Amino acid sequence: MTGYAQLWRAAPADWSGAAVAWRGLGDPVRRRRRGLATGAGTLRTGWSGGAAGAAGGRLAGLRAELAGLLPVLIEADQVLAEFAGRLRAAKARLAAAVALADRSGVQVDRHGVASAVPVPARPAWAGPEAGVFPSGVPARSPGASGRHRGSGGLGGTGGSAGSAGAGSAGRVPGAGGPVVAGTGGSPAGPAEVARVAAAVREALALADAADREAAARLDELAAAGRTGWVAPPPPGRPAAGAAPASVRAWWAGLTPAQRRWLVLHEPGRVGRLDGVPVAARDQANRLLLADRREALSADLRALSTGPGDRAARRRVEATLAELDGLAARLAVAGPPRAYLLGLDERGDGRAIVALGNPDRSAQVLTYVPGMTADLADAPAELSRAARVLARCAGVAPGEETAAVLWLDYDAPDFLHEAAWPAQARDAGPALHHFQEGLRATHEGPPARQTVLGHSYGSVVVGSAARDHGLAADALVFVGSPGVGVDRAEALRLPSGQVWASTAADDVIRWVEPPTQLTGRAALATSPLATAVSLLRPDDHELWFGHDPADPGFGGRTFPSARYGHTGYWEPDNPALDGMARIVLGRPVTP
Image (cartoon, rainbow, N blue to C red; front, top):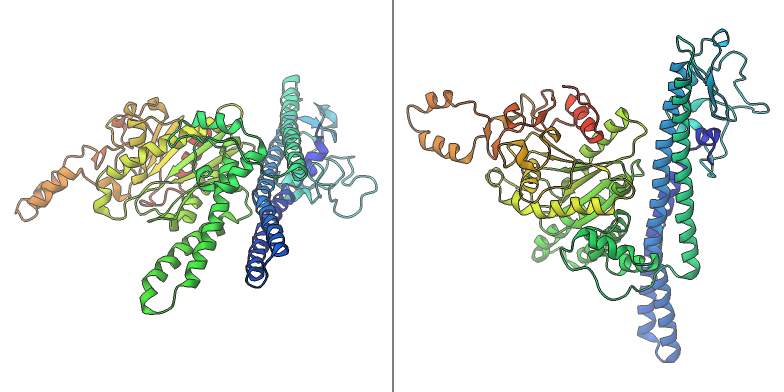
């Protein structure tokens, strides 16, 4: 069982760094594979016969072995990054338990045992964040000298507790966790002691479960290195459009080596298949991204700089820049780690990227952006999802939450396209299927699923909910031009779980249904045009139905400051807090 002092000293940042190091080995492995291919090609031009054939076969085998390493390196990265994330959550819960003890007049000793503090013995205490201990408790453990460095996060490499993500309390020196002598105003009763003890146990249990699971996953990888990383799977693949639940059952029936074979040899299929777990989709799509970047770089080298290839060069350079931007965002160490769940560079480009692993999170947000969003915008759109996650962490530090950028549709590029619902209707089946996939692959109790649409993205979400239903516990619309229905209940969710916010200065408030716009255009040259515009009824009808931020829609609303159409994610906008609380299922400030 993980101990109180062990968790307090644990350093999640060290584990995150180890994850990045394993991931970084992919580039030298790819370079070595390319070098072997180049060498084999050189040999073939000047060497023939049986020995040459044997040498070529051996080089091909080495290249295949190196290729088999690629999904393993990403898998090791995932295991370590997820362990760091869960360890960070456990430390946040432990810090909250220590703070609760201090407020409640409960003592927690260096072994994590909670008990009541005798009133006469209770000193004034500045708390662990100040590095000040109660009277009579040494600030350093016996034999310690200088700033203490722990033995590591649950068997890890060590690091100062202050880097561990448990708040400023992590700076306490000493061999164990902080000794807390609570300073509550009245003696702690059995109920207070029990609450603190339960909070400490919960934090330790989370860390212990994370430790055991990560060790088991790493043991499996080590064993696979002896028996073979990959093995061909049996024939048969799920049909296109197969139900995510049936895909999940098929995947569960494969061995780990067979799954890695599919990730390596069929990344295009695995990476987009709803019902395949998030970790495997991420492995496949990262391999696919690296292959596409390599192929485009080769295409660019093959094109001349002359006028005949100028247009082709511009297209290749633009696509390569988009993929490079996405790759740079995926390379960010985090937390949280990014997972690439879908990629298509054709046309305007599409991507599905998660921050945190949705399969392992208690709350999951799916964010659908609006007009003009494309592959080049993915990093910026992902930063909006990251801001919601950061606010979730501020509201509930110990919760495990993930956010997904779902940019898997052809968003309108121009205003005249955005005035019509065709592209939203076309996106509906894919969004429905994706949400079903999240439900099918989630581990443990069902997560709270929230789907958020901004601007035209709210039309996509509304159309999908209306026409197909969405596996979601809450829908959120910000800056919406309407969602394709006039009443919240038409979205197939309880109206109390349909939320909307529109800023007072958001121009979307003034869009009118296309039929009214046509009438206004006809009146534009009439002397009565000004009078007609002044008499426009405030009926809250927008391009795609009744304004969801109007009480008459029948849903619920949350406030937004005056930040225009794109400012809902500004740090001091109450709308950001509202979105986070809805994702967490917490009460929302009206």
